[in-house]
Image 1: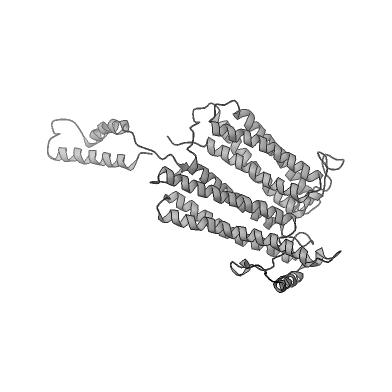
Image 2: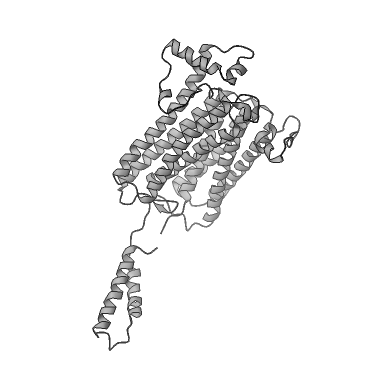
Length: 416
């Protein structure tokens, strides 16, 4: 794209030529305005203009910001990404310990104050007893106040962590905004990120409500809707990806891989792997929501079969992919195989290329984390989903996405 100053210079050339013709200066020469402008073009083209280097998806993010300012913004965004990573990990543990339905009220400020006295804890426990989960958990052995305190504290910590993310984003964002650190494209992105944080809080409560009244869910067990759980996790992954990508783009100066043979193929494989990691993780949310990890706890077969029974037992047929525990586990497993194959292909293609040092680290990291995540998944399955292994597996999906995001960020096209 030609900078604005070029158009200004061409306008000056046109004006000068027109003025000379009006005064008769060019009358003796067959020179037109068009030819004068054409004569000026080589001079304009020979001039060098600076072009934006700090870009994300082709949009300049930090116009007029110094290198130190870009670095500050980048570190802040990476910190926000880290907090979202922590929220996903904490949310996974909250889900695995069946703590998510312990807080039966939601508002932005009043629920920030935890029970401090024994009387307040008893009052909170009595509210919880009015909902189906208490009756379900107490069907064999009545839940104690001590047990309730544990699950309530888990959910409270998760909610407060989410509010902390909001503060960690909004306060620095406001400062950077008014200090002029953001270009227009960056402002748009920050508005989108802030909106996602707010929406995520609302979706979290929308999800919890489905467990407090499970009558409309696909199961009689008092648990949150797997559809809403997958929505909640997907939004978290999108928010994390936005913070991570934009933060890396501010902190790291991109390397130009344009002239490398086969770079287009490598970029395609890297982006495909990233997409598959995201898709597999979302299907993992359906596995968690339906407790589908407990249907078949053998590997590589499903009990004695390579293809499990009852894959299409639900009607209409599409519901099997989201409501049939057997089908959901089957899809998650096979998406994992496909993801691992894609990551392996990306590594095979990229390892012999003359990539930058950072790109090589990201490539090898994605390969190592891909196989680590597969081992974690298999171990979680065959050991009947213990909390610590399942939590490590969920966190591993975020780590794998991190390496894939980093790799695609390193391989992105750099404007000339």
